[in-house]
Length: 363
Image 1 (cartoon, rainbow, N blue to C red):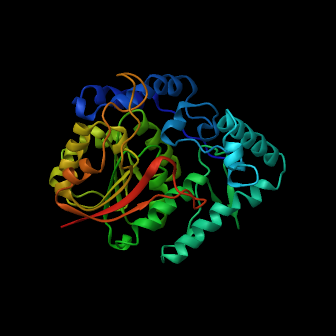
Image 2 (image 1 turned 90 degrees about the vertical axis):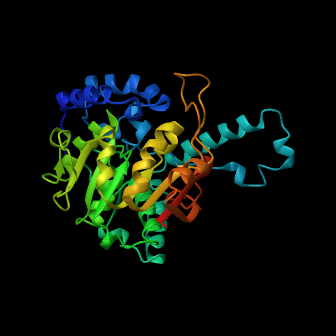
């Protein structure tokens, strides 16, 4: 039976009250204010029981769920069916989307598809790690805390599609610096904490400093505390820290985004941001980067470098002003971008809508 994640609504309220009392620079911007309206009620009413397999949940918005996706059929990849003549048919796009859904549903009826089609991402990520001399994929097993629906089991080890996704990010980053020498890693926008589970299991010596807004921060602390008992320093303790010097090595420290100025007087080896900056406004990102620009030695970014989709109006889904490559270059003026590449899904295909991952190193 999978281990469940405990609810702690007083902690959620504490985080939320502290956030609201902080500067607007550390509160949800338009993108997350849109989702927060549904996030808080769901956590208060449904809690975290089986949250990783929950259907139709707003927790999906920050990657907290691990649901099985239907196998994706793509009839348009077959020129016999999708060609110049068929594309000219009125409504062809909707027709082929419908056919793809039908084909995907048909494939999922066969029990063997989980072990054949879903095994492919594991094999791709394993080969990727071997190609770039990373710690092997088989050196760790992902947790089933929170009862994930998406389960890829290999020789008694458990993985999910998101675990493979974050392993890919690690494989890319480790090509440019030695994680064995990384002592302190700070992540802004830690979401549900999945990237931290992968990195901590690969490198348990690293001290992790996690920063996020509420209620994402709440889900992250509760889940990581269940995955790594005794290794998480709760927000209840971190909220009163005036300095982040002399931290206990190998622990996971949970801070609100409003504690980010603590980095001002702390040198960190690696700053990590995975699809979080792109969901903010340029002035908010500029504020965060002002601290990173002075404190970090290396930076990993996974972002939509041409900017996230914009909202039709304030309060609607999307950002008001997109953050683009120029904002990162300006904010990281003490850094040179060492590498930039198109980010891939665990099946080896490019991520949709132009996501790119990059490495920045201090000049």
